[in-house]
Length: 183
Image (cartoon, rainbow, N blue to C red; front, side):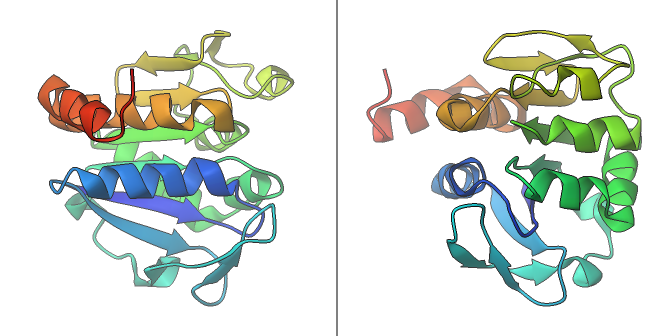
């Protein structure tokens, strides 16, 4: 399995790095963190600088990826939403029925890509008006076919668990929960 985690200046660090850490702990998922800026350095919403594995210009064959994850944070979510390459990749992944997951404010990226029409989604409170074509829920994590969305940084672990469940099944979820003492 291979997953893209997009990083844009202003990303929510907990939402991105929890996903990267826990997916890599499975040993069955390879993660590429992908910067959408000029280089590999990306500055999070709380001034934590992260070096991405790749730049978006290096992402050529989308078919090798099984999922894309979009962390929230501001202005990270709007930076991702306004990036034509991110939108193209998200549309292509959805067209191939690959998993697309977004947390906090990041479902605005899914709206821009036009992939959540009629789908159940959630987001950080206040962003529901930016998701007019979806069926909005206030649940912590919402799964609708190949789309997973979550409310906030406080739900980053639950969000990641749903991604693992989708990609690898319940056995890996149980294993991760045991290893991180999640109950």
